[in-house]
Length: 136
Length: 82
Image 1 (cartoon, rainbow over the protein chains, first blue to last red):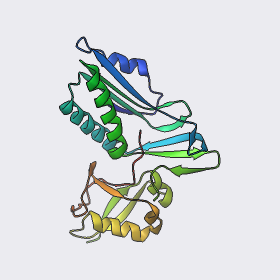
Image 2 (cartoon, each protein chain N blue to C red; image 1 turned 45 degrees about the vertical axis):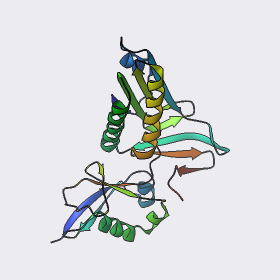
Image 3 (cartoon, one colour; image 1 turned 90 degrees about the horizontal axis):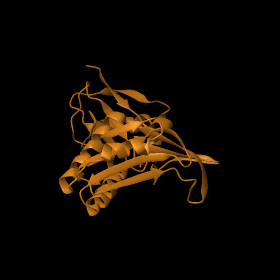
Image 4 (cartoon, each protein chain N blue to C red; image 1 turned 30 degrees about the vertical axis):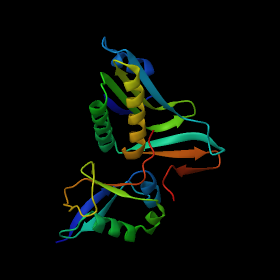
């Protein structure tokens, strides 16, 4: 299940979706809003998404992961809008029979999301702002 | 014929142009790279962006892909989700 939300991400409801009697392992990756980037103090982040395409690209990534690993359930939730320090920006959850697959699939999914999914992050510092990765 | 195409803008492209969508003339047989050329001509500031992809109907498009006025086209500056 893949989604984009403007509301805070709820880990416990994701856990419920991942539970399966065949699961020996559930892995979560949570991407968090950190209070600094390269020693600049972050006030907040603004995430923007091309929703339609972001959902389809995230579904493609989950499909690829399902081909590579024995995944029982998979949840991907990306937040958009204004996020404060300490909030969850993205949640990846994977349940598998054995732990190696859930670790590997979780990492693959977050690493690939960062490369291909049309979501953009603006870091708003106490002294300026910048779209991440946009400049040479 | 004076055909037009609308282009969605996100992130830094929206900030640099001050618009969330622009409408541009579309010549017969125009492809993705032609569209990029005319956007860059109209908004020279976009050259400050490290790289630019184009999506057509929600899929990444190649430079030589042909466009039609009914396509949903979007500029995709470097992504930074996660």
